[in-house]
Length: 137
Image 1 (cartoon, rainbow, N blue to C red):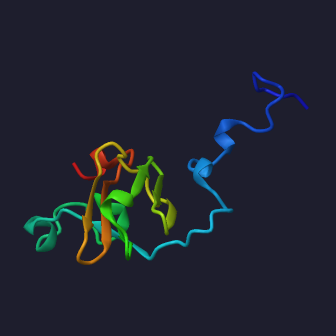
Image 2: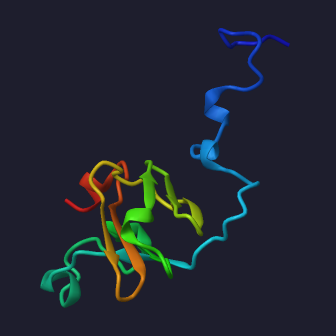
């Protein structure tokens, strides 16, 4: 048995640790808020009526992911939101959500909007898959 790692004292490689595990806190007593994950597609008449593109109604053909999070009795200023390529981490004084995302997202160019009337935070993230430039050209 040989260890290929440069540091022989390491227990595991960094590739073996799932992304976002540093956010896991099983001892945090805050409850998880209700949330929905929705997908958006940009379609035109050529898609709807003629089926000329390669798009279908599946999530594999969606360009954006929208996460709606119910946050009752929460002020906008109390929300801490951190988005990585595969993880959404939301924390408020009463709620905590650690969501491992279904697809990689463009974490630098997302947008979030707090709807105070509905007490809902809407986070829109662009899905970034490796071959979208070929599939949706």
